[in-house]
Image (cartoon, rainbow, N blue to C red; front, side, top):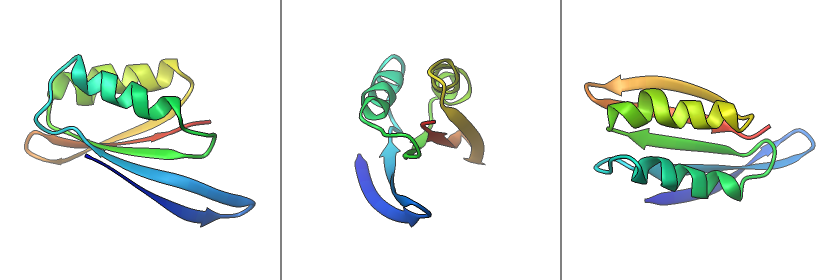
Length: 88
C-alpha cells in the first residue's frame, strides 16, 4: 500500500511517500522499493514498513546506499522495521 503527502520545506516542497510491504518477500520487497524510488526527486523521502528481515536489514539498505540515497533503519517491534530513504 502506498500513500503520499507533501510537506513544506525551505525553498520548496518535498514529497513523503509511505510504502507498506509487510507480508511480501524478496525479491518483491526490493522491486517495490526500486519502482517507488525511480520517480523520486532530490529531497523526497520514502518511508517503508517491512517485516521481511533480509529485505529490511540488508537488501533495501544496500540498494539505497548503492543508488546514492541516504537510508535510516529502525526496528519498530518484533519482526517489523521502518526504513526512511531520502533521495539526494
